[in-house]
Image (cartoon, rainbow, N blue to C red; front, side, top):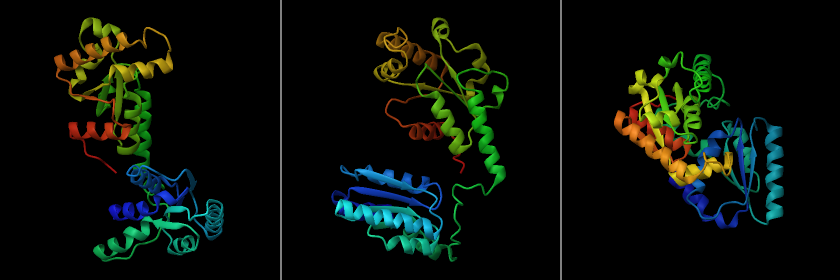
Length: 285
């Protein structure tokens, strides 16, 4: 199905100048899918218009008017990607002057046939609160990641499922938060500092948790760039300092047999999934 969408979108990609993302809820689902598909094209629509919470006839009518106006201004049909659960709203959107691709239209008929049941066309089930216990768990793990960020708290560290360690600005905090928000992983993070490098060993509070440690490494050049943005011209941000810290961190990982990964060319999403794969964590919905 995704290959088919890619093929259809690709036919007219050079002709489109406006892309509309239309959803009856947040737009996260259709936005993620379209963003992934568009990475396969050198040219993409120059203007992107996001319209979430289009969940009634009046809102769809306003979006259709916007699409029709864009078609007139651009001199070509805009590309419209949507995730509308309601069949009537999907039909109304298709009456616009845009080239409409709706992910529910593409997937639901085939799924309905395979599952031998009709789709329920309920709005907001993907990102709404339909299970309060599950939602509360997500809130708890996000709060945990915030409470145990950058070694600020030690009591209760036993509850962590994963503890990321590494030098400052190597990606520990965003990775922990992503793991918490997306996969309900109780992730803490702890920095490796100058004192640890002088001793050549793990910080004392972490030695009892070695089986849950995972290290991050980054290229010296990228670390230098990130630190320069925060503290320009400082010793902390200098390339020699970055190289020295990263070399010392690797030495600790190897001496303690701690698995580690290079975050330089990985997105936060890729980094989180790769870590979960390597430590054998199940990806919970």
